[in-house]
Image 1 (cartoon, rainbow, N blue to C red):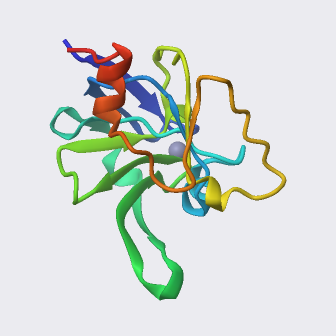
Image 2: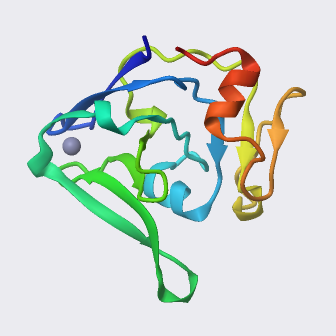
Length: 160
Ligand SMILES: [Zn+2]
């Protein structure tokens, strides 16, 4: 059975659950979009779950934001947020329609502690943010080499 992730926004207007084969919060994304919309500590930790298992309470309170990109275009990724408290909830990208990417910071159920981390989009890290990189961590200026699925399988953390 995949792991059930339960999450909610700060004000409680939105709560949700979904199943995940890949529940380890191992990715720290320092890109300016994640950092500004959902990662005030200098990075955001994005998870991955199964879109067709998503069950939402409070749908009417959810807004969707397509981030503005350099040059004035807009990202494919639909960032869902609570219109009441402003919490970013999850990201959905039509390029990967089978997946939902909730932020680890709004998950209320227990998540496995990852044995090592992947730091990505370091090219966009501001100088004030210290990337705390442990010896076993991997570092990428842009996107990482492995998908979330492959990383979990390599680490023996895939939840079948
Ligand atoms: Zn809220």
